Length: 166
Image (cartoon, rainbow, N blue to C red; front, top):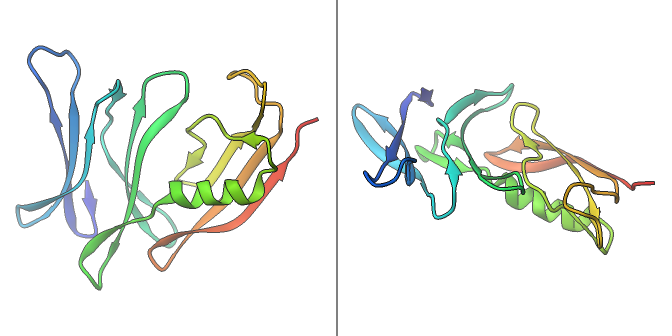
């Protein structure tokens, strides 16, 4: 695809003795000069999918989101906007912003134990909340919702809501 007038390519690395790819490199280029921006090494089982470009009302975001196999619904996620002033992609670091907001909003003794709660198209994070003793399948401490925004090439919290369980 195209990101800020630059070509986006995924380079997948394979080893002859392994059936699945072992790494993925996302590069962006202009006039056939490419620069790497994401390197994902499958040091655990990773299901690589193509990167994509998502057009939002106030930003265009280059998305790399590869699922880590297992029961945790975890992903290796990277989200970039392009800073025209510097001519460089800028990581939005949604995961850092979400983690900070979860620490602020959730009561002691509760936590989010699963991944996969972020939706780039809506810029919303929704997830169940676990308390000590909850099984992996069944969070009982309620739900959390965080509406995010992109401001000045950075992720920001617009609104956050924690609703305790019954």
